Length: 118
Image: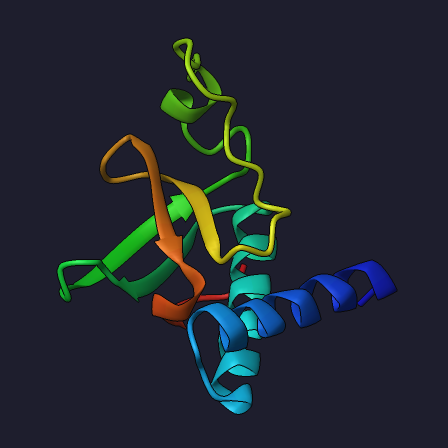
């Protein structure tokens, strides 16, 4: 892990502790899980779960890797805001949902588990 990646994880830990009022141990766990998930999404298909805002659990299958989904590869942004940058540490991250054929987002504090590590 590079110093830059370590810094990103620690900034997310601070954000989760300050904004979401998570205890340090829980914030560290969520930050590492988020880091692993984003890294895996960039390499291929990942199955993971998170708690949605309505309280239900979402079993997701997603990617951020070109060549996995034709819909993702051919996605064209329609005006409006720029695509979200997953390098932020505000705790909200996007992925391409392979079952819904669209972008979805999750909050780092709501991430439950990675079901596989690609």
